[in-house]
Image (cartoon, rainbow, N blue to C red; front, side):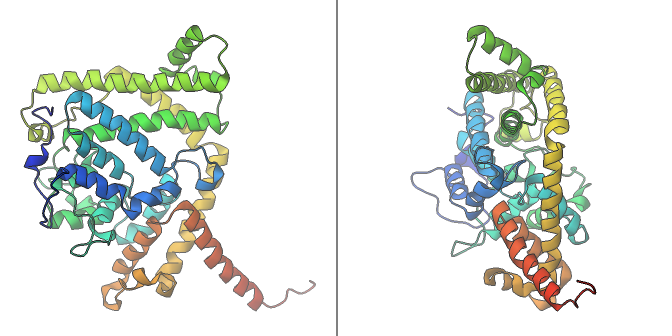
Length: 401
């Protein structure tokens, strides 16, 4: 049973392009299914969070992360009375716009795209599901419902003010689509999208601890000093003394997971009771998110994130790899910009001579953003390696060698 403040699929604001709905799936179920079957979703298999794709089979990829986020999101949505299918659709789509090499790749591409409107992975996710997926006969994109698109665009909160202030700073992809299909960017998103956003926080806080331990970037003894984590290990040690280390670690970290989920449920129920919304729109117009951690748990999570930032995201081995993959993006972007013949045929057809450098740069940016870690590395080795070989062959001999 849906709560009164849940998004009702029977009252969806519809799709940009009108189409007959399914007789046996709700609009939000259909959105979820289209996202799962998209090319961009499959590519997440070879896009990473922190570690580069080839560094280990057990580290999280964007695909495994998205599946974990969707599982947590559905659990929370169901417990609170929100629409689970809409929540799952937003959760599964939230990382579609990420570049190869995680946030390192995004930072590099954003710097290169600054003269052309910049790059933002949330805006890119929207562009993918509204334009870059090209499989249907009657439209580009997946033609998702307004509610799913809204959740993708602003699950982290409003991106402009009701007065329109901030609109000039919108990423191009977001501003361009919103001009055709108003997503009400000045309000908060639905409760379902807010659940997906918190599920993202829960998933990455937990699995970054797990992946960091597996990578040897820190030890169990070190993270036992952290809030939430320390009590979780203490509880496991008390109940299972002498437990094998891998099982001990798993038991403790799943308790950390549980603490975060339970906190969101208790805190969010309190906010919902105080607001007492009678519709999904009242949640959007509440002026603050209603799905959130308690203040004390949020302080604990900030301490955990500070530890991970210092010991994982800025670990020497990670920083070294960040430099290498940044160079890959920095080499490929000007190469494709200067020679569009290097683009695949399906991308070259979008390049029109009269569109100018900005349009061309955005096409190149879209192409690079869609690459997987593996494909970006292979493309760089093939194209840059060829040019170095040609340059070396053409160079005059060095005297004395």
